[in-house]
Structure formats: structure tokens, C-alpha cells
Length: 162
Length: 294
Image 1 (cartoon, chains in turn orange, cyan):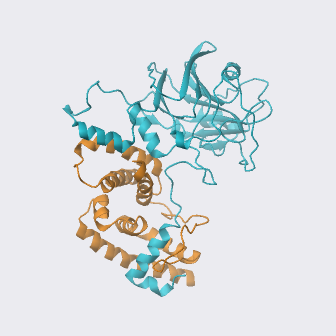
Image 2 (tube, each protein chain N blue to C red; image 1 turned 135 degrees about the horizontal axis):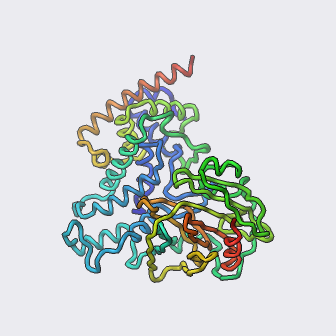
Image 3 (cartoon, rainbow over the protein chains, first blue to last red; image 1 turned 45 degrees about the horizontal axis):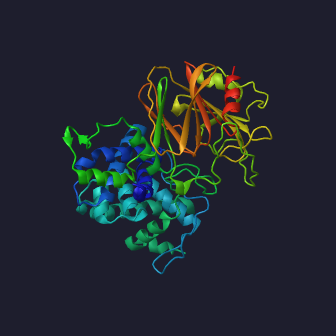
């Protein structure tokens, strides 16, 4: 579990930033331990674990009620861990804020699928397993969520330019 | 730098989201100080201790819903959790509480480690980056004024009258843990530093009333438990390797006392509440301080 705890904490935080991700992951890992007899041998363990984490975080989100404020926050001094490659981009603080704010306006299912695919860098299959949706839904929901993110981003910029 | 226009197509948005990932203030799997230094065990270590502390199953291969598990599955399960055959957790019982101490893996022990001595102490070591408020890195909850403790928790303030201590330098309450109250004193010439730089003594009080004795000790633990008496009440002096605490309260609710490593500590119950003192003064001096509480 040590191998997966970092992505597990991020998964819990992505789904329910308002509650304690550490606590959610602890409970999820204990549930995973108890559920191991139902684990299909030979299946990949990471998405199985992350699905339990995601379910735990969703339960806490329901208990926590309405989302409040910005879902995800940028680090104070965001470290550039590695030099950007040709495919990578470096974001200006303003763009980062706009994108975070736009993400925060999305519906939970849109934010989850974009977060799983691009913030957590899960594959489509892993995203499907983690979020408990069919792989085809991951594709369609991702496309739809990108469109909504674009709209939200445009609205953010209009607001900032005023 | 991104071209704002590239965010208008899907590929540009995807690239921007991937870049954003490294700049989000993600929570971490182990508590860390502001400079990133780990100050407590990671989640896997804490989960391992929690699992190990649960009631022992019968001495045969584990069962699930009455069905015996396959040996291979059990081994996979243990490997998954990183559980050693002898679990690195110790449980001890005081009225109303079942407390489990989980020790950190040797590879992550803070340096220098605490030395175990009934009467010895560790001299304070100056730190260039002491936090401005004593105990602010200890994850003790919300800071309050001493005079507000009783109003906020309904519990009268009881403090040690030992001459080594003046009034506490900071006071904390944690409503999520049954209004746990923690009093923190800075380190000084009379009060050697604990594992936490700049902190000389921490006194914590939390509820616990029912009778539910439990005692268990894992072999090979680097943490030593010693039964002691504190003003006639049962208690334990815990020394040796740094450890961390969690406990099950009188209602069977899991409570994570803290997510940090703790050095030598005295824990006892006076029949109405459980107290814990973290101190590097050694066993006897710590008991003296505990017995001066009024």
C-alpha cells in the first residue's frame, strides 16, 4: 500500500477536497484489507485500491454536504520538479489560477474524470475502474468535460478582463 | 509559457491540466513540517499498525465470513500491507481505552533517536528554524487561550505545579478528538527538548471512563513499556524508539491521537480521564511532574 498511498491521497483530495484525505485513505485501505478475499487474483491492484478510496471519498463528500469555495489550491511556491520537455508547458501564475478556478466550477463527475485522467495521469482503463464507470463513458465524459472546462475558462477570462 | 489560444482546443487543455498537476497543493501521505521534513509515519505505516492492533484472529489461517482463506492470498495480503509476521505495533490497556503504539520503520527514524533511560535526559539542541509558537507543528488541533479551555471544553484546567514549569507556552484543543486538550511548554535549561525542536514538555488530556482492560505486547518492538503508578493510578512509561499513538475510545470509535512520532511518554488514567506527558526528563522526573497536577 505504501507504493500507492501518494496517488490514493491525491485521489481522495480530488474527489473531496473539503475533508481530510489522509483519514479517508486510512479508512479505505482498511476496507481494502478486509475486502481482499473478494479481490480477483491477477487483476491490477492500483485501480482496485483507488476505487475503494474514491468510494470512501464520495461517501465523505455526501456527508460534508455542498462544496464550498475553490476545490483545489495551487501550492504557494509551486516547484518545477523537472525541466519541461518539448511536450510540456510551464504555466504562468495567472493561467494556473484561471484553470483552477474553472475546474472548481465543474460538476463533480466532470471534475473527477478530468482529474483522474490528467491530474492523476491515470489511463482510461484505470480511470474507468477508479470511478466505477464504463471505459466508453470515460471517453465521452472526458470530451464533454473538456468542453465545459473550456467554457468555464472563457467565462473566467471574461470576468478577469472586465 | 502557454499560449492562451492553445487552451481553446482539447490537446492544449489536456497539456495544461497535466502541467497544473505538479503545481497543485496536494496533501501528502506523511505529515511534514513546513520545510518538508517528515514528522510522523506515513499512511501505510499507520494502517499497518491499526490492522495489527485489531483483535487477534484464531491461531490458524485467517478466515473471512467463516471461509478459510487460501494461503497464497493471505501471503499476498500481508505483502500488500507490508506487514511483518510479527507486527510492529503494541497495544496496552487503560480504563476505557485500548491504545496502540505503532513504531516507525528504522529507515525513517528521526535523527537523533531518543535514548531510553529511566532517569536520563537529552540536552536541548538549538535549532535555527524553531516555529514561532511552541507546539504549532505537533498537529494538536486549534490553539486557544488558557482561560478559554474550560469554557470551550467544559473541562476544568488542571496543570502540574512542579517548579520546573511555569504556565504553559501554548494550549490546544481538538474537538475532533473529544475535546482533547494539550498544554505545551518550551524547552529550557530545566526542560530538555523532546523529539520536537523547541518543545520541552507536552501534557495531553482526553476522555476515557469505562473499564476495558487490554494488554498486549508484540515481540521485537523497539518501544519499551513499563507499568508504573502515578499517584496510585495505573500507568505506563513508554520509552525507546519513537512511536505514534492511536486509540479506540470508550465508544469503540477509532481516534488518531496524532500523526507524528513521539518520544518518551508517560500515560495514565485517574479514573475520569487519560493523561499523557511527552518529556525527555526520564521516567522518575516525569512521574514527579505528573503527580504535581492539581
